[in-house]
Length: 473
Image 1 (tube, rainbow, N blue to C red):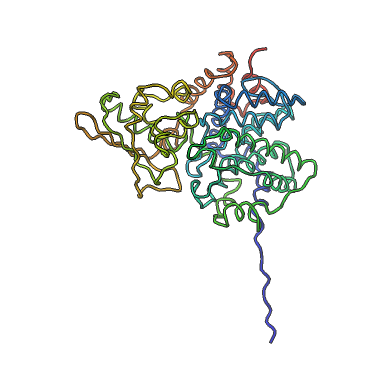
Image 2 (tube, rainbow, N blue to C red; image 1 turned 180 degrees about the horizontal axis):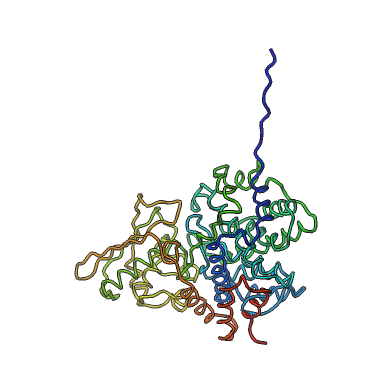
């Protein structure tokens, strides 16, 4: 007896649905909250580029770009040079992430702005006369894809070893650049494949005692890779079509098949994860922010001074915790990146000064005796009840010299959608970023840039934004 066996029907790779959505989505389809958060993200990212321009790796990558030379297409924020679009995206992506002050998607555990904004703006300037609605749409779509890819990943950051921000940033930057260029669905599918052949980003750069400056450059490479992928696809070059779910697609190769398809494809073109972004009030790893908030709360509520403190216990969700180990280095960082990824140091700054600013992560600040004395009193304690997949709530316990035991817990750190930063607060952050610019920027132009971002959907040519963020010649 012959039995007919039904053929196996393979579901089309998610890259196809994503490409279709990117190509078909228009500005008018974006929810008002997504538009508002995208405008804020563009302002916030550009501010981070300005602040990062004077950080280690900033001037160096600019110098290399100048040595390369090339067609003057796209602006290097804070410096004013014009370079080929891929190089501009690389430099702005690097400086935008240099101080770890850029946006986060707390649930996906990644950053989106330096990849999506740098790629979209570089291509917009290359094209010329691109309006604000087009830039907002491209950034919203690129950011949405980065977040969706992070949400689909089941293996936690610290277990898989891949740094999600650059790894998925290649795809998001490609979506943003491809949307700006007006790629067809077929071209964008190929562009994703071209992006995939470049995609990388590892956690080794900021664990143990490594903390290499490649941490800052990984997202720059993603922004550059996305621009290159879109431009190559526009020329007719092809890439793997099943770049996401194929037998050796990113989720089966990088994550051994441990992913959830739903976040990749459900609600495409209707729901935008950019609306769920968080913005940072402190220039350090987002997983530190709730601890800083808790420390500031205790200091404020109890009028604590550094000499009042006997011991500080910070509760963490892994043992050893990557932001507390090795403990001696985390208490007394040697380099800026060590400090940016240290809960003990950041908590000590908060308890000592009552605020945490960009300058507190400079080399000079790392030697302040008053901060280091408090940092030596900060000890992590493992709490298995704290979640590991998402950024966990923070709990701090302080024992004072007079015997008081003070505790605080923060669930949603400042900047989270449930505890957002306002336009005014983001404007103040932007101004602080400008004070760290490698090149002086005119105050009136900075105020114009803030207002321009707030009404970006009314702007006829976004190159005006890059002009405002360039030094006077």
